[in-house]
Amino acid sequence: MSTAVWWIRRDIRRTDNKALQSAAAVGTVVPLFVWDDVLMNNAGGFRGQFMCRALNALDNSVDRALIYRNGPAADAVVELCRLVGADTVHITEDFAPYGRQRDAEVEKALIADGRRLVRADTPYVIAPGTVRKDDGTPVKVFTPFYKRWLTHQWASAPENEVTFADFRDLCVGSRMEEGWTALSANPSEESAWERFDEWSQRAMGEYKDARNLPGVDGTSMMSPYLKFGIIHPRQLLQRLDGTAGSDVFRSEIAWREFYADVLFHQPETTWKNLQPKMDALPIDSGPVAEERFAQFCAAKTGYPIVDAGVRQLLGSGWMHNRVRMIVASFLVKDLHLPWQWGAKFFMEHLLDGDVASNTHGWQWTAGTGTDASPFFRVFNPMGQSEKFDPTGEYLRRWIPEIAHLDNTSIHAPWTLGLLAPADYPEPMVDHALEREEALARYKAVSGK
Ligand SMILES: Cc1cc2nc3c(=O)[nH]c(=O)nc-3n(C[C@H](O)[C@H](O)[C@H](O)COP(=O)(O)OP(=O)(O)OC[C@H]3O[C@@H](n4cnc5c(N)ncnc54)[C@H](O)[C@@H]3O)c2cc1C
Image (cartoon, rainbow, N blue to C red):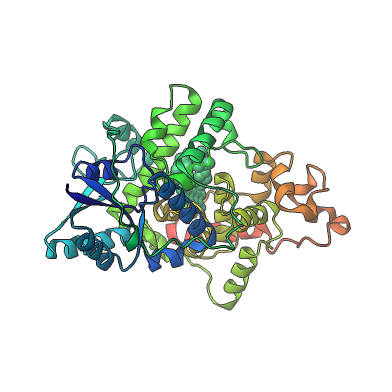
């Protein structure tokens, strides 16, 4: 019987997996994961742990047939094919710039060895590059993208039985580490569905409003599972109905697809402004800027909602979406630092760190990206905090130094003067002044 390799990357799951099914249609399947130092070095502690645990759970579900090999990928994949006698390697396509380049190299090496790379699935409902205007050009704004995205057809993978080949001797081993205890999640397909089912039954009805409240368990927390393909977004869409909460959730899934599409068409926007005119915006750099950035990364800005967000990131590898926007706005518009610094910091720590959503989430907030009415929208950290965390629940959870304050002063402890908690810093900048500074800098670029 023939053998085929299922090279796992962002599809760490058994169900609804077209790459796995495509390999199974050839014969017995050899599941492969390649340790890639470039990705592992960028993954940060939380994301690396999360991925290793998800791989471990998958390995359990395939009778320990998962083969780990060391990169570089082109060498590892070709070598394994030779060892197990496989002519084809089946993958879920990667659309991020690094993954595209890596896959092109692997494909070249396979062809040179008389073998084939089969791109059988994507991490998206609709593959990046598919949704286009009538004239074939990319759709650059979310709402028209979403309208067209909704009209595209998609199908689940078949669920045929799979036979896994046993080549355990070829496995170089998992990188699960003894000391990895910081992560409370034990990711697997089962735990992802458990969370989603519990959350959607309890909270989907309130999602439209509750998704903005960081003190409430109001969002699905599916992003790390989606990042590694422990579940596929098609599977989530299948569970949605026509209620208002479901409609908003569907559009959030589409934001993920939109940003992947934007990055697919313009891979250079990983680190460059999507809107080139914004290149002229004066940005601070040098030792003072670096010192301010260090204060921001240490969660010592003196603005509770910003510091709580950074502490949540550093302490759990996750940050609430509303707070991501507030924190990003503060870095760019109150501290006048490059959004790229913030994006890199987020990528180092986020469990769900995804180059497309992260880069374009930052660019959206910084006013350099896909948002049409951008830069003069400067988030007020106190106003946002009062509006979206009115009882200070989120602030109290992450900043115990101010937990005893009342629901008004907790958003701006310095207003208490001498009664302000001594162990929490004063604001590192004056928001009102920095807002004016940001608008003046923007004026110089826009001429308005
Ligand atoms: C500065 C900044 C950086 C971000 N970086 C990332 C990142 O690295 N990885 C990441 O997955 N998301 C990122 N986001 C988007 C968003 O914050 C997270 O997807 C969301 O907080 C995940 O929580 P959830 O799964 O509970 O979301 P839910 O509200 O339950 O949404 C369901 C799913 O929809 C998608 N989604 C929701 N909001 C967005 C959005 N604004 N953009 C893209 N997809 C969205 C996610 O896949 C999410 O899991 C970023 C947003 C900002 C403003």
